[in-house]
Amino acid sequence: MKKKFSIYVVAASISLFTSACMQKSFLPDNPKDKEERKDEKGNRWVYNAAAGCWMVYLYSLASNHYSSTPYQFYPGSGSWKNSSGITTTPPASIPKSAYVSSVKPNSTRSNTGSSYSSGTKSSSSGKVFRSISPSRSFGA
Image (tube, rainbow, N blue to C red):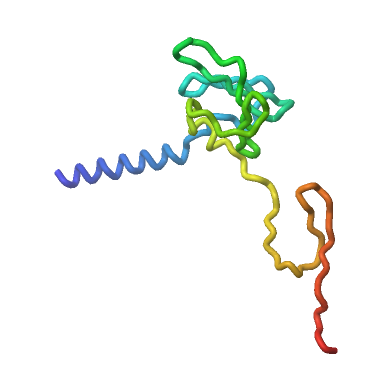
């Protein structure tokens, strides 16, 4: 009896592990303009290629229709904006499973050198600055 139970537990564990590893993202990597998706709560996601964001129209079960003012989700940064364009947190009626796995990591370089390294560094504004390295020899 214990052997059968152990086999079932191992099989279930392997099954859960492989399904978690193979799970696809709700939002596609390269969406097309006006591509639509519906999440598990009925919210409508429409991609806006010009803005580079997903317009999320919340579904109201009580009134059985969608909101007229969408939230905007930017997968490149993982940020949300409300209908006024103000950065906000995502509404509770949007399941995290719909957007968390689609957030792209930032492509910025990490600054892993000392403050006395030579070469060029760019700031977030796109300007390039040259850092000054200290003299290599002392007292000569």
